[in-house]
Image (cartoon, rainbow, N blue to C red):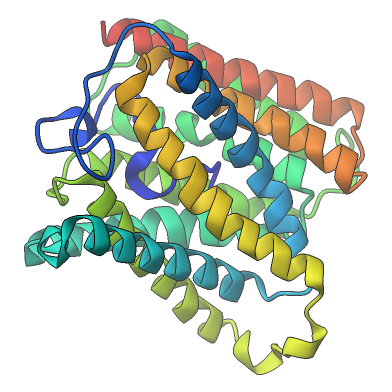
Length: 332
């Protein structure tokens, strides 16, 4: 999704996984402490996360122009996961990839929820929806995370509740008939389902036993998530209608961009930022990415910037700001 850090690396509202624990790795080699100020390199890495993750929605939209959506998602995550595993084995040795069966099963579950359910459905939804609208729908994920946690007894801040209300209002403005023009209802339903699955995976990832090293965990999540997308593609009968000669060069280029820059490059920057910059600053990606996606969609694909898209999108961004700010203050 929102992309969305890859896999388990999304900021968890009100919880933090073992990313910053004693077993976690801030780089492929050694851990680091989180400073309270930003270096020039940290600002550069944050800019990469802002722009590259925001641009992944554009990349998906271009990829699915001529590539089957679920097969594209499968290729993206299996390739990225395999590349990450290869790098880890090269830098640390194959022993670093060892996990217990329980940890592997947990990583597989999170990969299926986040990458198959969240990002895989985003590929499918973008066959019907503009990239900007998709990004704004993905931005609703923190709303579902708050609601899921309320259901398990969590009491969020007042600002978080305000954010939930704003998020629902923004969704209504974006999709209500007569307000936003013709909207592909099926695409919206698919994308909302994807954000719910992503939220569920995000909440569960802080409560189950995952590999202690975040790079190892994410590598397994990528591979299993990609396999899940491949199985869905087969059920969706995509292989039978896939013809290599029908795929455009720009779709191949977009898929390569998603693998190298979206899944590996920006992901690495994000993991490093979790240790090298204040979390309050890093978490701002959640409301910058959809803005970048809407702008790029309008500039590159000439997606219309309707009045209601701007209004609804602004309300959703305000909702995310409210939730992130409220939960950040609560965690202090």
